[in-house]
Length: 490
Ligand SMILES: Cc1cc2nc3c(=O)[nH]c(=O)nc-3n(C[C@H](O)[C@H](O)[C@H](O)COP(=O)(O)O)c2cc1C
Ligand SMILES: [Mn+2]
Image 1: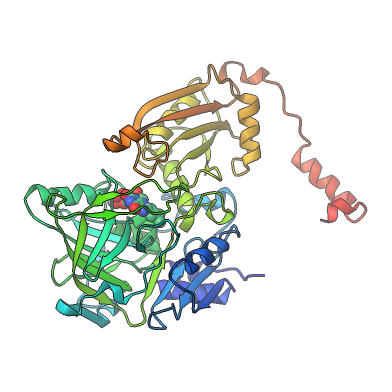
Image 2: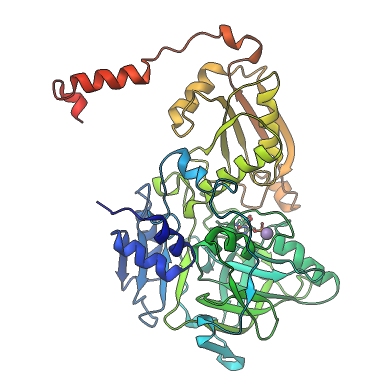
């Protein structure tokens, strides 16, 4: 039995990766694994850990071929350290307006910090010094960036963006970064390239859970993820500046690579394929690279990782790193911000990872209400990219139970009259349904369906009544017969 985590420890763990590992150990949710091979063995162990709905933190040390305390941690954000509550409470916990500290807190600049314990410049720069796993056999590289922050500063403003984009090792001084068109660092790098400059960039591959969460979340343009993460942990993130680029990064990051990314007309390298979270190998092609000029790292650094895995493993139901919960919370926030009334819950169906299948429960209040929710859920910032299905249900449906959702679809949905199909939506190269000719032209659009599985508003009062034992009566009878019939004891 694992012990529970009090809110103060959880908050401290959110702001500090080393504290997070301590808390995981205290509650019996830390597995220290020694001697694993970064070539496929670590990936296989990780996938095995996803058989549990809330997987333990795996901390790999003595990784074959590397110094014993150059460590890699997986499942940190997906673990019981951060699983506060069950069901929709898990989502509510990530909602902006529902948290104690939700206002962004601007980061502060400091002179130094643990990340500067080791500064490698010039001919000391060698990215191959650090363990770099090949997670799956079909991967076209060793991926060090899966729970990482790729950081760039807008040349025209103070906006510093941190996004999680996959990063792999090419050679001693080169990293590949895969950034889908339209993502924030893509917008920023293109501004430098348009001026004929190389884009200054830093990449952190180990950092506080709150930072990893903010970098994976789709925040609006011009919003600095460090401020959002600061708000989440209730204190300002402390930043230091890269010596060569001036790009800031948190002073307690574990390993940071600093360099410049030339435009693709100058340099590209073959990137991918990579076993992606939808469960396929899809995206691969020439991509711009980071030419690394400096490395900063803590003593005995910890790389954080969330390698993708098929969204059919229980450990991925909430999305690797809890990203499904984050995205459900953002979608709920977006629906309310857009003025959709009566939203009672937002959930991501197992099998769809954090993006493909959105389920929204509403208390229907007027004609067209379900349509309003469906269209916003399709087009708003948190869900526009890489979606497929939106299902709107009435609020008597337990949306955390896939059987209840499919019951609503099977019994309250008229395919002919209660469906919208919308074409030309934003998708990415990792969409396995991207038509081959569209993929070749980088035409990243897909179609979506909205399923209105709600009692038709016009006759909802006369809709057939549900056959169900009232929960109160059920509990009363269960108490009365407990101990007398064996099935009640299970
Ligand atoms: C583990 C993980 C890996 C990801 N890998 C990529 C990637 O390789 N490329 C990409 O464009 N987005 C990737 N994403 C999604 C982005 O992190 C997400 O869209 C985020 O909003 C990007 O930050 P931005 O909104 O500041 O651009 C990944 C997300 C996670 C959680
Ligand atoms: Mn951003």
